[in-house]
Structure formats: C-alpha cells, structure tokens
Amino acid sequence: MIRQLALVSFAATIAATASAQCFNGTGGTSIGGTIAATGSDPAHDEGRSPLTALGFAFPMPGAGTFTDCVIDANGLIYLANGANPPFLGTYVWGSASSLAGAAGSGPRIAPFWRDIWAMPAGWDVTTTVVPGTSFKVTWLNTTDYFSTSPARSFSATLFATGEVEFSYDYFTVTSTFVGIGTGNGVGTGQPVSNLAGNPSGGTVPMMYETFSAANWDLSGRSIRFVPNAGGGYDVITPCATLPASHTAYGSGCYTASDSVYQAFATAAPAAAALSNTAITFTPTGGGQYVVTNGGTFLPVGSVQAVPTIVANGDDTEQVVPFTTGSFPGSTGLAICSNGFVSLAAGNSTTWNQTAALLLNGSQTSFRAAHDMNPTLVGSGQIKYEESASVTMVTWDGVWDFAGSSAADANTIQIQMYPSGQVVIAWGSLSSLGASGIGHYVGYSPAGPSFDAGSIDLATQLPFVTSSANLTPMTLSATPAPVSTGVSGTLVTYTQGNIPEAAPASGVYLGITAISIGQDLPGTDLFFIGMPGCKLHITSLDVTLAFVGGANSLTTQFQIPAGVPYGTQLFAQSAAIVAPNSLPNGQNAFGATLSNAVASFISFL
Image 1 (cartoon, rainbow, N blue to C red):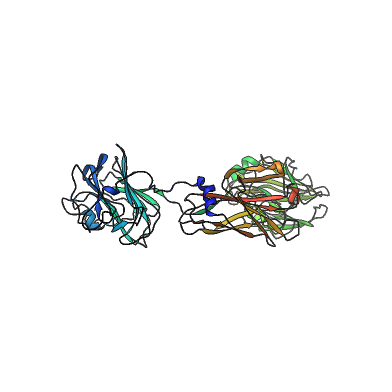
Image 2 (image 1 turned 120 degrees about the vertical axis):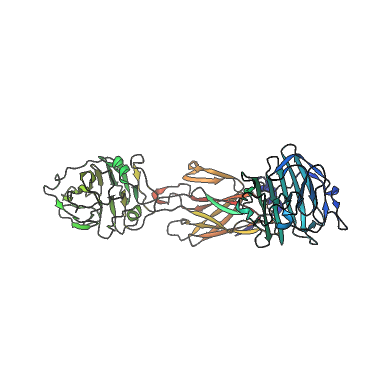
C-alpha cells in the first residue's frame, strides 16, 4: 500500500523534529549594496567590499595580526590593517599560485574561490560580527558565471584564536578552489591536501584543494583550519551533514526458545559458580522443562555397586542401552567424554564445545559440556550406573584436556529418571582451564533451537523453557529517505518473522504505524494483555496495512520533496494473532510488535 501526505500538511506536522545542518545562512548584516564593481562588470560579478573591520586582531601564522578585511564577490577574503591590501587582478581565480601570491602580497582566505556571480534574485553577502570573538562572511545564492543554477551558499568565519571555519550548504560544483594562505609568496610548491580528511599542513601556513565535480566532498560540511605548533594549520571537521538513514532500535516480541543454557567462556568462573551445586530439570508434560536450583550429588557406586567405565577416550561418544534403567523417548544414553549425554547418537563430540552445538544438535541432550580427556595418566574415569529408579553418569575427577595434575580434575554428574526429570550435579571443578575451553550447561531438544541467550543459573531460576521456538517480528526500511527541493523517496518497510494470524491458517496480517514521536525505552503493554511487548513510538500518525500468505510482507510510504533536513520519523509494526495462541499461551490481547525504525531525512 502506498500512502502519501500532502507536502504542506506533512511539513507543518513534522518540521518541529528537524535539526539544523552545518551551514547556517540566517542573520547577518547585508553588505551587498556596498560592494563596488572593479571594472565594467556588475558588482555581484566582479566586486569588492569597502575595508571592513573584523572586531578583533586576527592572528595568522607567519604573517602577524590583522584588524580588517576586504570581501571579494568571488568567494575570497583579503586581510588588511587599516588600508586596502594589495589586490590580485580582477580575473584571477583560485589556484595554488594565486593563493601563495608574489612577494609583498597579503593573506587570502578562500572558502570558494572561482568565477561566480549573483542569482537572478536573492543574491547577497552578509557579515556577522561577535566583537572580540568572531567575524563571519556569508555568500548567499551564488552561481557559476553566466549560470542560473545551482544556488550555492557558503561562509567563512574568522575567530580571535586564529582559527578559520568554512561551512557549505548542500550543492554540486563544476570546479572550484578552497584554501588559506599568508600570501607573500609563502607556500609556493606546497602540495594539495584532502581537506575533508582532517590533514595536517605541517610548518607551512598554506593549505588548499582544487575541486572538480568528481571530487567535491565538502557539500554539507564544515571544515576548520586550526593553527598548529609547527607554524602551519591542521584541519578538523567540526560538522558534517548527515546522510539520510534508517536505524533500528528496540526489539520486537516475543523471543522464546525450547532450550536453555548458561555459557561460561573460561573455566575459572564456571568453577566458582558451579562447584558443589546442582540444578534440576522437571518436565511439565507439555514438552517443556522447569529448571530449578537444587538436587543431590549421589555417591559414585550408590546406584550400581560396580560402575561401568564408558566413553573411555578423548572426544569419544559411547551408546549404552538401558537394561534396568529408562528415560522417556530413549532406549539408552549416548555418553560423550566431553561432559554431556544425548538420547541417541549423532551429536558432535568435538573438543570445541559451544552453545551453538547445544542448540543445534541432531539429538536431545543435557549438558555440562567441557573439553576433558579421561585417557590422561592420573585422570579419573567416566562411570555409568543404572537401576529401575535412576540412570547416572559421573565424570569422576576427569582431567581437562592438556591437564597435568589432580588440580585439573572435574567431577560432574548427570542423573536421568524414568519420570523425565534430570539432575545435573557438580562436585569440584578445576579453575585452571588447561583445555582452554569453557563450560556449556543446559538442555536442548533435537533439532535447531532459537538462541535466546545465556542465562545466569544462580539468579534466573526457576526458568521455564518454551513449548516452541519463537523469534520476534522484525522491521527494516529501504532505501534511505532522501528529500530534496524537487524529489522525495518511496520507502519500503519490510516486516519479517510475522506470526500467523491463527495457527495453521497461512494468513499473516497487521499494520505498520509511522509516528513523529519516539519512545526509546519503550512502554510495556502488559496493561492491555501484551506483556513483554514494548511500544517504541508515541502516536499513530499514519497506518499502513499489510496482509498476505507469507511471513515476510512489505508496506510503502512516500517521503515528499522539500522535507526539512534532520526531520525524523519513527515506525513500528504490529501483527494480529489469535489471543493466547502463541507458545506458552501468552498475549491475551492478540497482537505482537516488531522492533522500531528511526528514519533520518536528509538531502543526501
């Protein structure tokens, strides 16, 4: 669906959100009427101002201080002291040689030195003086000689510190010259600089760049020449107009996983958190587990008088069929030397255990995974015991891979009960980390699971796994929202991971709302039956409906021409679902939300 607001009402509604760009041509005192022609050409073509006071003594490296200036209509300032300075010829335009000048010539400041003249209407040169602080010259609505477009506005500000700032509106060029120099022949042979790249001019008080249409990169920028300790200038970029962009913020609802885990990147924190503790997984009957703190480490040999030694190799898995023991959904246990059991063979036994291996295993597993090696001389063994009431696997003092002493030993126990309950209990864990691999503790059913992130077993239990994996709806937007004086942009919003409107219906529907207000932290909508869903916009100024047979759909919105630079719009999508139909029966209201997108409108 395409929705377009009328430009007048759109601009009136959202202008308050606009922020200023680098160039500011407002204010100032017009001196256009005082600029005098230098020959037969009109003043707005080849003209110069009277001698004009700066309002302070401006210091220039290698040239002294200056109290006055003359402003040239062709984007140039001559510095002076009480009398007109030596002028270049009327038709001399910006170049390295003309900036350096000849012996006896004075300093020149050239924010845009080329053959320019007035627009048919609206041309002006203004000055803004802050006595003792700054002097600003602004050239408004200039164009190439004998052209009527494009309009170009720019400024140069001299500061009492000796700094000089050039600032540019957004425009294109055919060619121009930008620079600063002391004249008097100083800087002859000085190489060109990339002024937008924050260069250092070293010890020579002259810097410049010659531009063509291809390399003009100061549009919408400000650059500042700062005197350095070496007697030259360094250039910094205090301001650059931002390009149009879309930025995602916040998060959608809901994130749910049928798995749960805690990842410890190294052995030391795992040893501190897990040693002599236990956690219990209790099935709910709906394919979920409730994970709680607590459980008892059973003495080795207490279930089976003579335990069976299993998985007696490095990075090894051994399947042990049940005889007297049992566990729902399994005929035996696949026991890995690296600290986990699976309900069947097939999961990776690599030493490099990770959360991803837990979440994407082909078989259901319970894990206290860590890189261990029971084949090391001195290491303990992996011991299997079973009875009608419990099946138990104990990594009984098994050393870290590359371990060399009893200080590298790890004692881990996994108890499997006929009811489906599982206990993982730890004795002492090594904090040395000889293997270099951390610990990955948790449960995941067979097949891929959504990664909801690591939890803290010490503080976030009890925890209930989800009956299904659920990823939040997403919102993105393209292309960048550019708005110029003559054109706008048709923005396409893409909704992804849309939940079905009703289970197994194959129908996906909802709205994308566009607002002029942002709620960055978000407001939780628990009070209308959408707990965990945060609204990240403040109003529904425009709504765009989407409906279809796929879980990724689009809507469109037309950004008009002429939208002020810096205007921001904020969007968020909502999808309709049957109340309480999501995993775990959540959301009585019957809707979910996406993340939000902030759109920054610019003319580039």
